[in-house]
Length: 91
Image 1 (cartoon, helix red, strand yellow):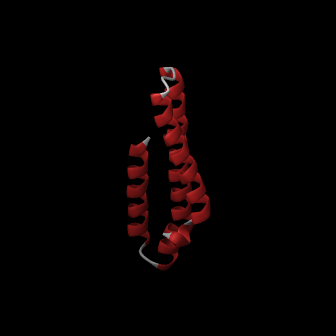
Image 2: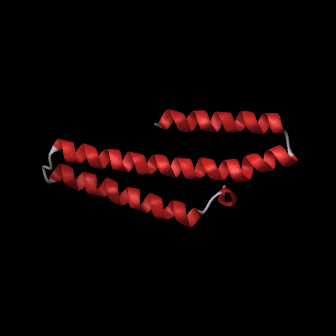
């Protein structure tokens, strides 16, 4: 998997998301209005979705390309379709 993506970029994104989640948790304790908490939840959800997009793009550009060029194209495409399906359920 490390060959497919920029791990440093993903770690930075994930650390930011963890910070957002901690901030949301703190907002609950501070009696912040529900609307503001929901806005922050949506921001964290969007950021996590972007991480998935980056991973999927890396998978396409490396693993899928390699699988088509050097392996079984039909299986590679079927596996990629399955990965897209799993990712799309997340949204």
